Length: 409
Image 1 (cartoon, rainbow, N blue to C red):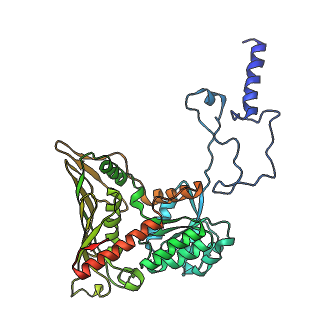
Image 2: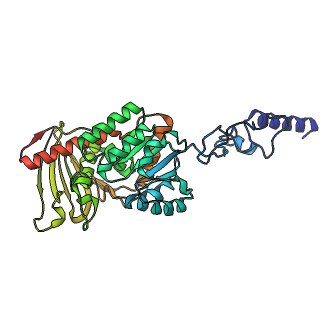
Image 3: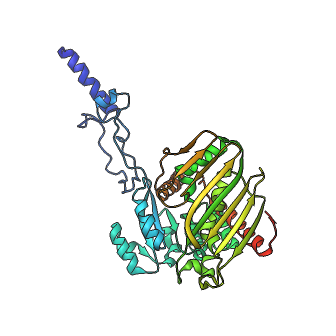
């Protein structure tokens, strides 16, 4: 290469660096220096975006079809976790470590000692441990964008409404509330605040369940005719809030039967027009003196599809469904457990166990979906209105069980 060619080549590279198209090992002479007054990016990636992010890392990278780009941390949603119980500690905290769009910046609990111990594991200062009364004061806390509520059902409305009024987005565990009135108040509070309220229906964000829904929608095996859905478990002994009617709002239907109800609606993409139900308790089992142990309910949909669902607090742990169509069926077992999900479909000449798509950590997928909608200002898939629909339907199911009649929706 001649000297003139070398000068031209190096000049070309310098021009590329100066233009921001390539990030070299060193800053090219004459390029702009960083603005010392620019807002520093916090741990979650907020602040002025580094102009190098997303550019090819070198001239060689820029020349390839799929260049290696300078990585950058995405902006993250900063969450206060409300209610440090079994679900939060056992499932949510590990899941958030897998999230790409969420980080924990505060803990809300009535047990300060427990809160400080958990804060230590997260690297949070003890000042980030708060009691429930401080939710209403969060408007001035710029380190919190949203709340995740995992308190007993009867407290969902209290904490959700406080968070929304404080200008924070809220992801609330299912069921949305313990009463229809509370759920309606929560939905209205979200509308008034202009903030997102999302019901934590993780099944909607799990790939295998989504694939089942897709097969049904595309009529892989024709029109769906029946759904069979079982959601049962052995609840354990007292005392626990799930066996306390005042705290839980209901029994097995509220806790696990809601999976059968909501997932069936999700899979079929339509709303039931009538329900029937039977409810019964073991008279010798004193655990169920306040809430129902067993309930079976039937949903009829406008398309003619009928769903038969069971829910129990006193049976072997089962989580499964099968949607029977004209020419085959699709189903999952386990269907709504936290892990180990399996999906299959079957026609006249095939029975296939799905290996793709692979399932994921459902809580991480749910949290990132929530954060993405908040960060991009787009509607969530499972808003408070979705939770409210199920609250109203569960009341219809109880009405049908008590009256022995088919109840119109």
